[in-house]
Image 1: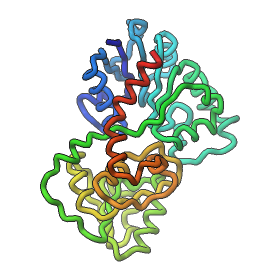
Image 2 (image 1 turned 30 degrees about the vertical axis):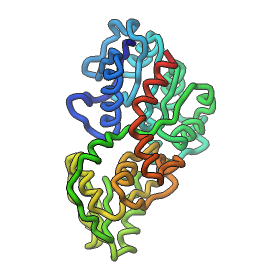
Image 3 (image 1 turned 180 degrees about the vertical axis):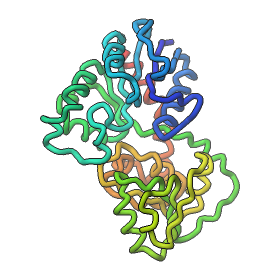
Image 4 (image 1 turned 120 degrees about the vertical axis):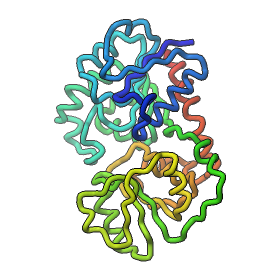
Length: 300
């Protein structure tokens, strides 16, 4: 049994939150299941007391922690594994803007925070090859860091437990939040040029909702378990991001629910060779927690 401290912005044990929190919850639970003493620390409970007592510090999304605390905690920890969900440590704009040459030389975030942060990382968990490649563009020296490529874990049981027959309606398309970096403009164009489809988007209405044609509906926020039922009733799922997205859990879940994907090369999960193989896709996301802890144990 190892003593592990998980740093995360939000208490995913009390409130699952978004995709990163859902993933962290599954990882955390499996760590406990296999006998590790896993503890969670959020910014509200941040303390350096007894940091040295932990065998490994796992840093997940930690944008709300003070930089000084992170650097000190990581320097005191016996080992640190970074479980990257996006690019917050080197560039808060990376989800919104593609890599540029200046990212390597003139980015104050990377040079003042990123390099010091990575100086204390013993291992990295990337969500896809595209995720890692985007980091290496800015910091080629990270090629030396031990790593694994690991898809976001998904609780397949929640999909499989839907036993009732759900009719899949032809020419229907489901989507997530219509955000700029997730391809809001491209999605708008697609909706306008495919009037034969009915589009249903989960989440808040975009600011330009009035620009969308009449074949588009915004259904608001939906309980995560009910999202799977919606996916199973749609023929397609859409996301057309303009920048590299580390994974895109929504697309992974939609594919596992039987949706055909309207996407592009910026979607991390679609870079995996097994993406279109349902059985292998299911196996990979189901075994991610096991892969994660095997890697952590190898670092310790």
